[in-house]
Amino acid sequence: MRTFTLVVMAGIGVALAGPTLAQESQESAPAQQAVVQQQAPPPFSPSDPRLQQIVQLVQAGLSESLIAESIQKEKVPYSLTPHDLLYLKQNRVPESIIAALLAVEAPTSPGPGRQAAAPEVTPTVVPPKGIDGLILKTGSFRKNLPGTLVFLDDAIEWRDASDATGNITIYPAGVKKVELKCRAQATGPFCYEFEIDVNKGDSFKFEDAEKAVGGNRAILALRDAWKQKYPRIPLSEKVKK
Image (tube, helix red, strand yellow):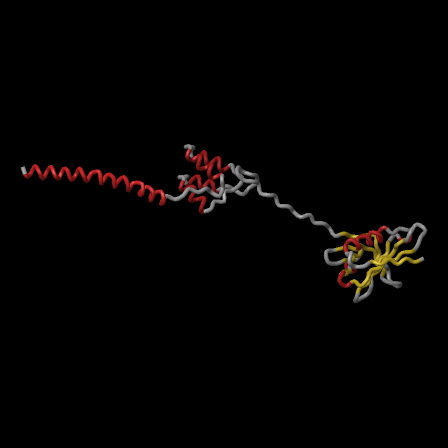
């Protein structure tokens, strides 16, 4: 009788303990699930949106060779960062496909998801503006020299038509004054000589090669070019009657 009583009491204790253990298990389950959710790495996106398309192709069950062949047709390279490699690895992209992504050559045309690189613009080289049809006056007892006066970025260069050793460089910083010599005519002043006077050294006098036949195209072109190039250096016009 005593044995039966102990058994009955033990059964009652188990029955009473059972709901408590079950309740504790149910109460701890959400907490464990929250811990698991906190430990799971957050999803992220690759730097190149085309990689998302690659993952979709892999998940759709397409063969590695077919995906690699599609990648080889790309013209814009995949600049894979460590972030992108981790993205591909987490999405179970095979290494053969990753190798195909790394093998895409330099861009020649735009690919999906990207814009074509802007073509390099080669700057147009503008040749120096030269005034031909001029004569450099060297003095009463020396032969005048025909040639061209060229305006460079930081200097003016006289280029002798027959002998390069006769070339002369004039620096605007050393110019003291500039004078345009003309003579009065019924139709207006006829300008025929352009003189550049420098601070140190001789002055340079340029005459129009067509002066003898009544032409002054080169001198007028020189006048206009000087005003445009050096507007801060005064140009005086001296008219003789």
